[in-house]
Amino acid sequence: MKEDNRSKLRSAPGNEKHLFVYIDPHAFLPWIVLIDQEPPPDPPSLPPEVDVVWAATEAIGARQQYVAWRAEKNTPFRSLGVVP
Image (cartoon, rainbow, N blue to C red; front, top):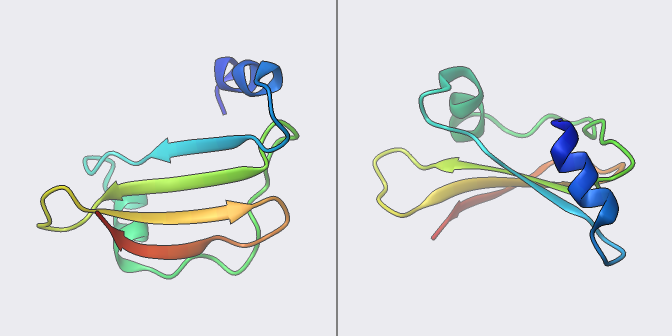
């Protein structure tokens, strides 16, 4: 995680800090995992500054539609499927 993101989250107001990660379709391996696989069964390792992490990418052949996963601290990712 980039240090500027950590710094922004540390200084942001509120009790729950969200990190959104966009996966560019040109980054084939992470892209195809989001598109074609189930989320892993283990929770992601999140730094203390992050309570919720989102991962999203463009859906195959779908204009203005995205595939998204979401995980909370100590909770595995869950797929939100295709979202508009």
